[in-house]
Length: 356
Image 1 (tube, helix red, strand yellow):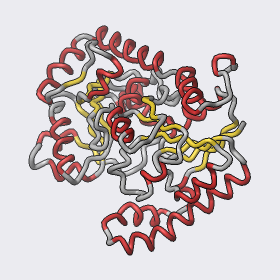
Image 2 (spheres, helix red, strand yellow):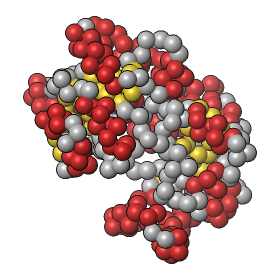
Image 3 (cartoon, helix red, strand yellow):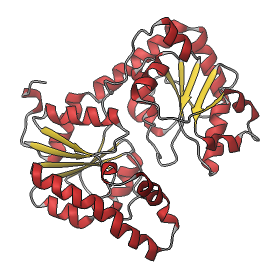
């Protein structure tokens, strides 16, 4: 059996665990990245094209999506997959997916909300070709059920092997050492004010804030942030991020504007590296961990007390990291996620009987 995976190139952890899950089911996996089929300036134009009048958007789409989908068809014909697994909309056209559907099972993993993602106006129509849709956000499941979509399942990716707890040599540890670490962009809209407000609640500590220039527009409101800000001018590799999380104690995790119930995936990267996530509370916290004592704040003012406690109680911090990791590894293991995929998609496999 063969599977064609249409995934974003920057999400190496997700690519790895998704591929491993399908390999566990007995699939030979082949990954294609839509970004490989277009130039850098194409991507920049496409990301802003939603701002233009519809007639110009459709003209651009004719060029941009056609270029990507022609390459998909070449890959599909060469591989002849039994399953096509797509992250978000994959820049697919409905007619492309209709062709694939004739011979292959179709599955989607939604990392962004199909109602708010402007990269492909076909996002919602594409989902009607799915044999199964998987997502971390229970709100999206409820919303998509209203459209008549079926086989929607709640699932988080397994913890990525690229992120793990490890000892660092003294030079590397001292280079990245921090009490609190945040790596991520900000927003130019009011969501940016909300994110800056959240991070501002950590400024009484040794906070290292690595991000894009969008953070600067909020320094007038939150001047203490500027002292902790380090503008990121280059790409951070998975390995570097792992090192940085290994050299910190606390990792703030904010709520993404597109995630209505789910916890941001940054929580998974930090946790697997041994840092304690301090979460902006979302309903997903209770959906995963129940009523247990999770470091998740419903009011940003609570952050200082939570961080101070765990910085003063290292054993409790390590115990909480271990417990959170155990819950995630048990509930969303490769084996459990594979079993959910097999049952939802009605795959002719027996995951528990396969060697991995």
